[in-house]
Image (cartoon, rainbow, N blue to C red; front, side, top):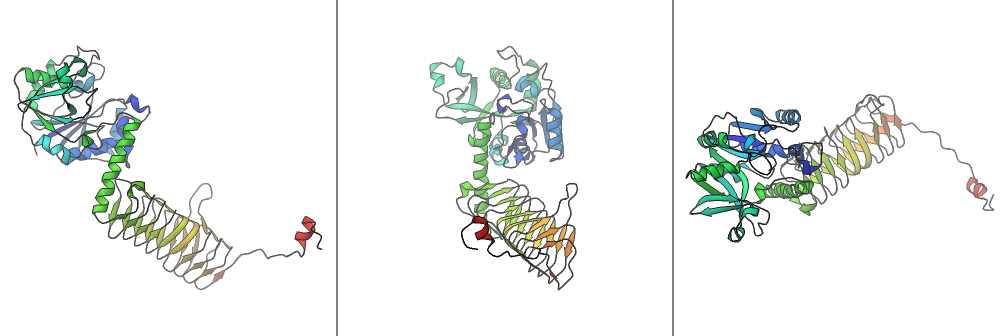
Length: 432
């Protein structure tokens, strides 16, 4: 499609009350600006992001995730405002979509009706039951006649429910003609894109309104808006995966990162949280389990388990209060109350309750390797680096500090001492 895209991401976002640039605030695992860029990339091979506030920080973030994005630093001192943001930008194509970087719910599908419409200016609008506080868009005979700020509306105009959604498609020659004519003679002393619409209308240009869904064009200006947008995003993500065959118990209690992927027959119980680039295939994730950047295949996790980044679970069961970090478990059972970090554990191995891999000495992390068909008794500590070969038994309460050879029993216990009648002597119960 012969379309250029300009994404406005220069604003400070003071209402977010944060040192983090507004467009980098995350929604379902990704900075909100990423969603606008993804939508743009589905429509165009020519994308320019306009920056100003913390420009280097925003640019670095975008370049770490996307290729082929061009950048423009707004001359904010001399040309503030949305009109100033699009000045002096070279584009490859004759039609230009102007999109806002703080619209994380926008999609390529929601933008297609705009970019497929033909007019000098195509303007996104939607209807509100209560448009109070919004400028009204006056539409007659299928064309935009005016955008009227609420304070300037007549009583008749105040009854108009159509408002500006803030996304436009301009013919390049329209921008070339009218941008140099923009004035900042207004209360904010800024240059406004909406003035392009007025100037074009005054010269009889065709300005077509396209009605869009309010939800998709919702802007984020505060932490409240951010939370509301994430609720909508989560609903979309859950619906997508349920329609793809994932079973969810009480889905509104489940959080799924936008980067997570599911394959095969999966079940997520209530309260599950899935972060990052997690893959879940043919697995059952039980209630209140947290999974982060992990690969779970033909396995069950939880309830109340935690699988941390870099972990791979295959044909494995981990139970309640088991934490796995940067470990590969294949064909393993770890029923409860264990920490398995920086470990490789083989098929048929059973991990008893209270087992810990002691992987950190305060400076470096070390690996524990446990082979196949190993029976690990409860309350075992593996002091890494250590290797346990196949077909080994580890007695309950053992601290493993040396490698264990195939077929052996490892046991380290302090001999038990019994002092008869100590209880009665200590508490002076009368029995001696």
